[in-house]
Image 1 (cartoon, rainbow, N blue to C red):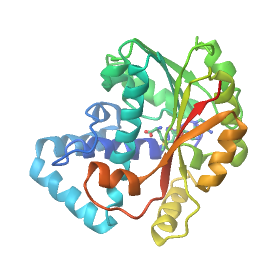
Image 2 (cartoon, rainbow, N blue to C red):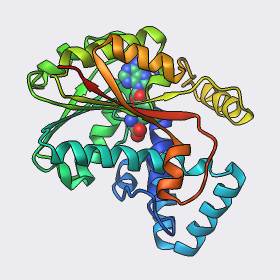
Image 3 (cartoon, rainbow, N blue to C red):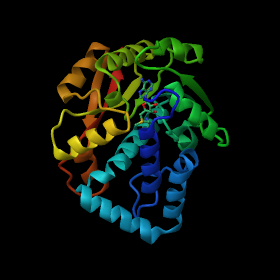
Image 4 (cartoon, rainbow, N blue to C red):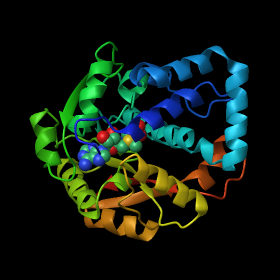
Length: 282
Ligand SMILES: C[S@@+](CC[C@H](N)C(=O)[O-])C[C@H]1O[C@@H](n2cnc3c(N)ncnc32)[C@H](O)[C@@H]1O
C-alpha cells in the first residue's frame, strides 16, 4: 500500500469484474464496478458494455493467452456471491468485507436487503471508495465504512465501534487481501475475525498458494512493480491449521480446477489463488 493513495490492485480487480460482466456468457456480473473505478478504467468498461463483439474478442484472446487463467476473478466472484446468498438465505444478517477495496456487493446483491454491511479497508483506499460510493444507493439495509490498517489496528475494536454485533452470526469476506499482508498481519486479522465472529459465522478467505510457475512469478513481479508486493502465501494444510487455531473449521477449499468444470464446463488444471470457506466452531 502507498500511504494516501488507493490500492491499484483494488482498481484492477474491480475493472476486470466490470469487463467480465460483458463477456458472452458471463460467469459473474458486476454492473456497478463501472461506477466505482477511476475514469480511464470506467471508460474502458463502458466501451465493453457498448461493444459486445469487441469484448467477446478480448475475452477469447485473454482466455487463449492465459490458458484460461483470465477467468479466475469471475470464478472467484461467483463462488463468493453464491456463498453469501446461501448464508443470507440461512438467516445471517451481517456482512463484513475485510479489505473491501472497490467491492460492490453491498450495491448489487439483492440477498443483502435485510443485512448490514461493514466495509473495512485501509484508510488510503477507503477514502477513494467513499467518494465514489456516495452517488450509489445500496441494496443492503445499511453500509458502514470502517477504516483499519490490518497490520496495526484492532479489527474487533474497530468493528464494535462501528456497531457490529459480535453476538450475531456474520459472514466475513477476505477476498484478495491476505497476499498483501505480512504473516503477522494475516495472524492479527484472523485474531480480529475470530473475536468478532459468533459461533456459526462464516469466513470466506482467499490465499495465494506457494507456487513457482512462470505465471506466478510474472504476476509477483508486476505486483511488486506497483508497490503491492506479495507478502504471504500458504499451502492448503497451512491455511487449514491457521484457521483451526482460530476456532474455524474448514468446510471447502476450492479454486479454478474445481470451479471451471462447474461453471464453464472446461477442465482448468492451474490455480494460484484459492478460496477457503470456514465456519466458526460452537
Ligand atoms: C486486491 S484488493 C482486493 C479488494 C477487494 N476485496 C476485491 O476483491 O475487490 C486488496 C485490498 O486490500 C487492502 N489492503 C492491503 N493492505 C492492507 C492493510 N494493511 N490494511 C487494510 N487493508 C489493506 C487494500 O486497500 C485493497 O482494498
